Image 1 (tube, helix red, strand yellow):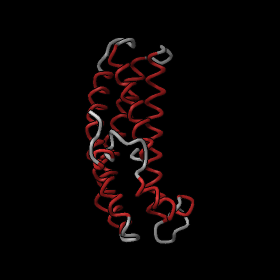
Image 2 (cartoon, rainbow, N blue to C red):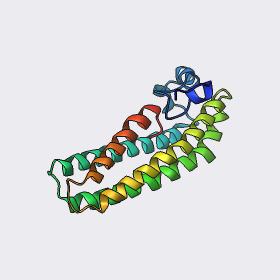
Image 3 (cartoon, one colour):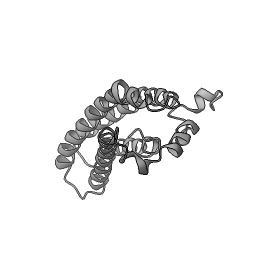
Image 4 (tube, rainbow, N blue to C red):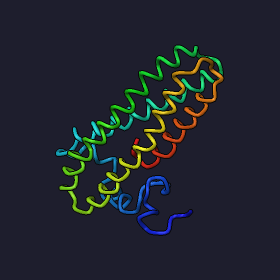
Length: 174
């Protein structure tokens, strides 16, 4: 069923990019100026570096999964690396979102009151992302238990990784 209310249109699983409120703020505070802001340089640099780390982990998981599907990577090596990378991804992302919600967002809201609604939306996104991370964990665990590279569980895991990379990469959550 298509979304029927403005709030539903902003839901993480429906929207295709940043809402207008965030785009206006990006206009007033362009990314090119973030690193030169004296009061927020370290905070923002660390924040953005973490998002880049999450994207790099997803890229590595995509590459490894494609390699094992194409039989260019040993299944055991794939499982070892996927276990390590997948665990790091989920644990660090949960911790990162907790820090954003509890510290970064309140600090940044003090800079401009208009940003409060945007960070409220991102807080909701973090909670919506939990369902996708649960699917990621479920499919990763299944892929870690297969005995052959051609098992359907590896294909499902690959689809889940691609969904996270595409859907959440465009919203900036990952």
